[in-house]
Length: 292
Length: 217
Ligand code: HEM
Image 1 (spheres, chains in turn green, purple):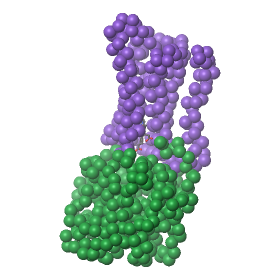
Image 2 (cartoon, rainbow over the protein chains, first blue to last red):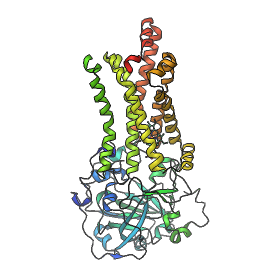
Image 3 (cartoon, protein in one colour):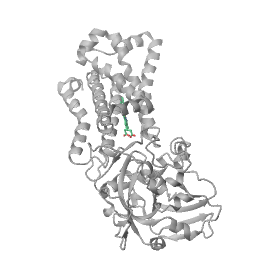
Image 4 (cartoon, helix red, strand yellow):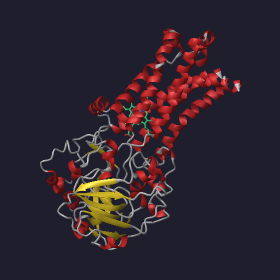
């Protein structure tokens, strides 16, 4: 069913959702590195996104994730670590002080948003579980339950959804373990109750509804790599205006901002989505045209 | 039934109905209801309707035969022109709202991206059909040549499906659905042609098929 045929607006934000309803997060401090670009209105962020487990149209997640049960929730950390363990959601909320970080978020489909995420650096978790010297990569897995996500079987990709980072990428302070946005806990359609946000990579690397974290010796096979045999998206998927997607240019993007509309000019896409100062050194000596 | 099909009112009603998808888009636009990414929304809506009108246009001839409603021919040209109308909107959305009239970028895309290349080819092939859709052109070309030329719509429909199949990321159900419809409609033509070749009377019937200028005008 086409997005434009369905009546949107019944659920303009997740506030009206049944199941888990976002609640206000208190004691959140403001991270000093936030962008000062205008924030995308929450209505756009909650009604226009990709979450294939709930359907492949942009407004599917907002409609089909309403009753998604996200409590109780545990995140299991395993693999090459000295202290494998499970974290309950309550524990995750308290591992570190929560920060609001306003990041640019660039979708591989050449649109972008600016979102005030809430969370803390993923490195917090890494330090707690103590990776062994063999650990070189981290694999992340999204929850998958065909009963709660009946449309997942039709998305054409293999589920559960798997993403990955090199360990040093995961340790970069920008890599965010995210539990909220816009002052509240995450709405279901945006990856409740806990997700990753990797602002210098295309959005599909920022895995939602995280249930498993696995430290590994070898580079994990990610969902989109498996789908396209590596021809479509590589493992790194860093935002890069100089390397086009096979079907469209990545040189510019449509910023979905406050008041953006039909005639809003596109903006130029920045290398590493503008986070080069913090992350470019991770890729020193690598050919980013090959490792895209 | 016959009188309904031949009434000029029916034609007017079908004409207005064909404008409903556009009217809905405008209405939604005025109500700020084109999703967070209105350009993508309009591109998809107009692309969908182009393909739908191509399929509906291709369905007219089989339906005339199967339902014994030869008068349906009265609507074929109009429906074909609406396919062209929606592809013009689709193309305009792309060149104006998406590419923002940067012609160099446009050419790069046409050359480089196979889904654009086939879509663009499909669009170009429809132009001569739209131009020669008048009774005057049918006379000028002669029925046989006109029919040959207008078989280009088969190519456009196939290219439209390939365009759609190549542009989706992973969920190929909708392009396959349209592919199936186009395949059935083309297979029907091949089937009747084969049957027509065998039986003499059948062949005559196939040859007598459209265009009938007075009816289509
Ligand atoms: C007869 C010709 C054409 C047909 C039947 C057609 C049909 C379609 C359809 C069905 C879609 C997908 C709609 C959806 O996802 O719901 C689409 C998308 C699109 N078409 Fe076309 N189209 C044609 C020609 C063109 C041309 C000439 C261009 C530009 C040069 C073009 C550019 C696009 C673009 C940019 C998209 C969106 C791609 C995306 O979402 O990534 N199309 N078209």
